[in-house]
Image 1: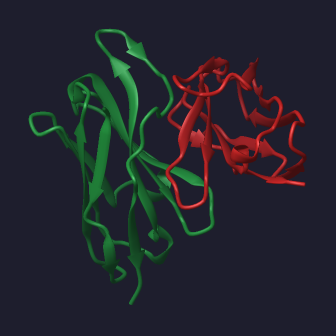
Image 2: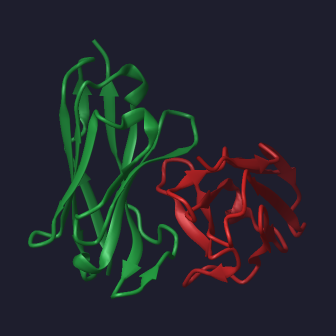
Length: 124
Length: 106
């Protein structure tokens, strides 16, 4: 059974940092790109970042470029999101999701699995 | 960046009715489109990928169609458990979500 379990959310002051983790199990982690998606309270879904299956490539939405860093440890089947210089508009539930499959060929299949989400509240 | 315009923003329908939700991309996304269902307090769930492929375990009353810049999600014979918000997403170039459609029962 595929499982994605996020941790690390909570209350943080504006301008401070926070690091989210996502522990993956039930699939070959190193064969999949991974992504973070967020959802502000009562709002829609917003893609944040994607990392390639081997960690060599990363992609970000414009509003978090230079502040957020997505990374992974394939040996630990864990995905991370380092968030620096946090702003009130970063307040959201952050979801870890499984992105594309790669075995030498790229297979985009949508985000088939999601974690339960972790709430990040940026407030003084 | 590719923009996704989803319509309608909200929708009220009766049990047994057929419902259609539309998504328009700002440029051709070559069927790189997924649809998700999200119930209150829950994580989103994948319904459709590659514009028209049904994800494992999703009831066959859900279907996706479209090409180029225009895509749609159809729900046949609406059930009470289909009350939820629905989102489209393009993954042809980076990833972008539509604004969402909130589906309620009439």
